[in-house]
Image (cartoon, rainbow, N blue to C red; front, side, top):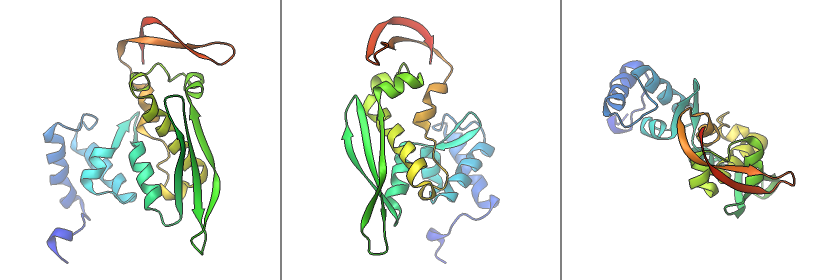
Length: 196
């Protein structure tokens, strides 16, 4: 086997690499070598290289979770499943999921949608990422929900994304509060000091 193509198969192979990842200081969620090893092993389970694992998997609340980009890539890489974005703007993301049959014809499995109103109901709309990147966050929720509902085997159980868990960060920042009327309309409020 060519040295350049050799897979990492043992802790002796993984350990020095993970030590370098931790010493680099660029992976803020990875505090020690053991956490780096867990991320690399988790990534290997879903077909990621060690560097892809470090860059796209995160340790949040004692869980290893991918970003939405990895979930999207795993679905696209699958020979069985695919998706098409039907709508993506600052108010809503709708994604249709497909399964290929033995003749390679795509059959619709369903549509996963996530809206700003859904984010307000879930209590995540006041998060910093939701305020700055609403389209990205709507996409992240729609793709991870769809992966969970329609093709969980394509992501090998990696159905919760870092974007979904972004609201668990416990830091005090000044943000604009967003509220919702009884009719379901999202409205802006005044700035408050609040945990996101």
